[in-house]
Length: 486
Ligand SMILES: Cc1cc2nc3c(=O)[nH]c(=O)nc-3n(C[C@H](O)[C@H](O)[C@H](O)COP(=O)(O)OP(=O)(O)OC[C@H]3O[C@@H](n4cnc5c(N)ncnc54)[C@H](O)[C@@H]3O)c2cc1C
Image (cartoon, rainbow, N blue to C red; front, side, top):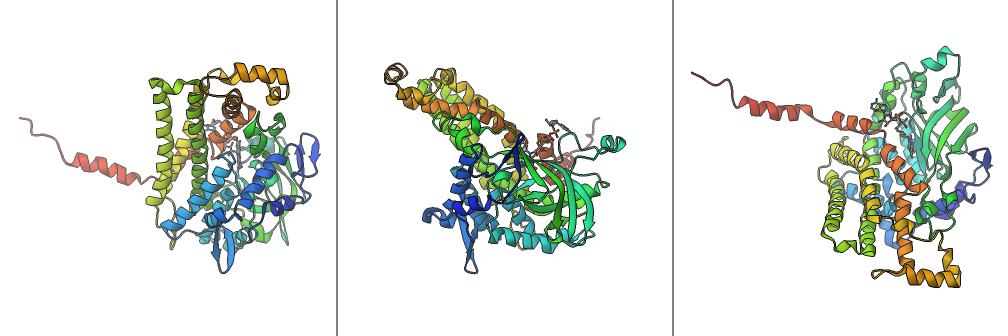
């Protein structure tokens, strides 16, 4: 079943516990901190019902339609279909929603192509994973994940020595109908707009950290679960014109706090196995499917930034200067590089796991590393191109509602290249990319959404066939030996 936007928003009115500071939010779909981003989420659901996008965003199986991100790829064409769907969703949110509904769903879909890994520990949970995948696709579930322990709480010794509860989420007891978990996980982006949260461990655990190794899914209104929102950014925006991104794209980030939350057995995927808790992501295509979505999402953002760089130089007339053309030529090359890295993952797809085809993992991690590494530099180029123009504009677009101010604004702020109001609109958009609080959160997100850079590079290291590269060197050196020097 493909949900509509209205149906999805209705499903969020489920009594979930969300705090903004000490305020408890009654309804995330109508609270001023969330209302506009909630509407954006609804547009992502509605797009699937538009005739133009229906076949891009969904597929049919056994007379039932499902979101395209639940497609298990067997051919390059299937991979292309998945990529096109991610691109369409990312275009609708300008690449500014990292955890759009196709992100965690892709993790689960990738895992479902190799479920036997969930049977390799003491417990046999492959059936749970498959039925969770079916539940997600049948009910068009929007899930996010919280797969990191809270910062600086990764060493239990400090807490245990002082008889303090270890803050990291863990199993505190087993009962007949499931396990009970308590503790914190950072961070769950978009959780306030989601139906469910996947809890797990993407960072390696020590083999002894068995109680933290729980991997499970819980509804956002689970009893004992509370979502602590960081400072809402959208409240800084008076109107869409002055803060066009802040206005509707604050996807939100919450800290997940569980106080004795019951997880029924059928929603548990890993239990008491610290090694398996991490391996489920990398021994299945889960991490690859999910982070391919992240690559594509970034590409949409990059396209908007490149367009902005071009328009900003047009608005100042700098586009005629050869040195400036070189700068935006370099930006264009970067956008094309990312596009090529995304398409290459399909061209060089891997026959893995058995009976399925998966995006090329090394290329996916290369793109992920590239995206993380480049973002600050890309934004800084845009910042440089803006010059002081962003601060030359009046404080608010409401100058247009005062006849005298409007007349002066339109007269003095126009340039040979652009009308005053168009210039202001462009500069406001640019500022929301480079300087607003929203821009700052985006920068932090791009640095850390897939883990710190050393973690991403470790993935690249793991996926590299070092024998191949060492062999090239060996083969070359085998061509010659100690010379006969007389
Ligand atoms: C905006 C935002 C949204 C997020 N959304 C989600 C989400 O939806 N789900 C989720 O599970 N998580 C999410 N996260 C969490 C994210 O995965 C973590 O922030 C990330 O893994 C980094 O962990 P950390 O913040 O604890 O930083 P740390 O691991 O404490 O690292 C902080 C700094 O120290 C350096 N450092 C630490 N250890 C080492 C080391 N061994 N070697 C070299 N350098 C080191 C890092 O490079 C980094 O610069 C989000 C984070 C942000 C900022």
